[in-house]
Length: 369
Image (cartoon, rainbow, N blue to C red; front, side, top):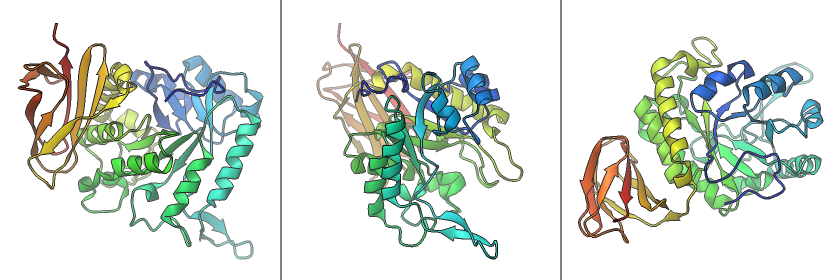
């Protein structure tokens, strides 16, 4: 998918660019996030302000932000890469009784209102894409936070109100399930749904957890990596890391204060950016069969630079063994397992490999010389 010519100031979409963003962070930390492989900010607290845009410009960190008066005054500033709606309009919205002052929750924002706002935002500035981030109701059918009258079919209208459609679900830290680590598959479920609802005509991004958020469980680096590659393999074309913690005390940049997770996320981002030309190449068919029917393996095939790439991930919190069939490769080819310092021999285009729970295996099969 190529970006429309009208997106003169949009993200640098192209074969070598893959958007890896961070959600609602202080521009003062932009250089730290750049070091971690982040190449985009999404959302600014009560912004954009002149000071925020100046700091991001100095750090060379593009941002997708709200279209306020300051933002519109900077329409010629390429540091603004896009505009956005308010977050999670599909969730029940806070309301305050004008008489008693009592706070509660009312209905979600109507999908038709999002479409109406999209037209207004686009009219104000057609040179940038508009992003809509939806809540966990995209993937979690048990979610009660969508408010009265909401229905799943609403999403087919919501997605018409953006050029980039994203969503967030945090299986380990945000589902309020004692075994949230068994639900990582909610992440690709949401990606698949957004791709279906948009008919493959819009860019689909998604958010990734990497902190405790509300002070409970935190995904392990291995689980975060699985969520990342589940997203990519199922068609996500952009990632947004959610790095806040609200309990036991508020920490906007909790990822930066977690050296092991920060190192892991940095390594994931470095690998994604190195593979950007591959990820942006057309997807081809590949067959993989799991030895355990209850533990599916997801896989995606790409072709780039004379090599076939197979990206794969175990989709459940249990081990299995995968049997791959790859057409169109040399009869006795060898697959390099990227980043694992090992190789697997193929026979007639077939090979097998073991998967620990949520394991990610990335294979490169060189063309015969």
